[in-house]
Image 1 (cartoon, rainbow, N blue to C red):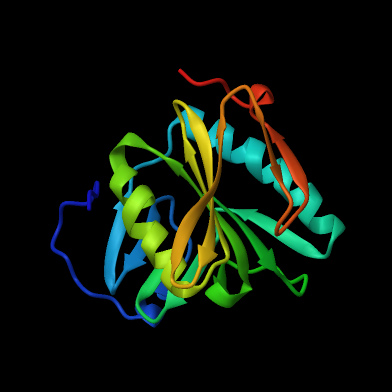
Image 2: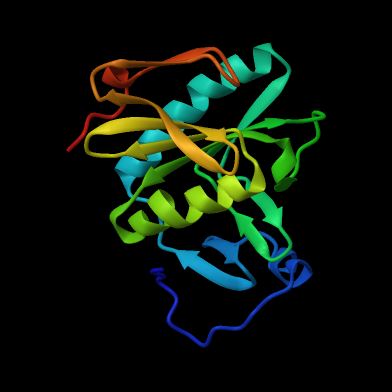
Length: 183
């Protein structure tokens, strides 16, 4: 696990974590240990905005919502912040949702946290029962995984320049040729 934070590591309870309130840093809680991620690159932000915008419009048409960087409590002591999440919502604005409200979590892989997104968070989301996981590799493709039992299995791989047609939990076409191009 990599982290920009190099100070002493102190375990936090969920209440202590939530008391941090809003900060300019992206802080997640991995089994009670705060994990500070560096700011996302411009490309990472471009992709996140493109995906969130398209998915949000489709989600709202069917009574769901999509958020960029919302806190998701996966279990006590484990709060992640996916880049984009499709959630069941009651229309209220909030900064934290429970895992059972999340239908899809999306992570955009960054060089500084690639292992977290490809392995650690994928396992966390599967353990929490989130039905769909979209992993976006900035340089080559979008990988969609569906939950089968306790693990994700690859549902599809969409290279940049092609269209990923999601049908569950929302019906939307993600045309990667219209997203920020790979570098």
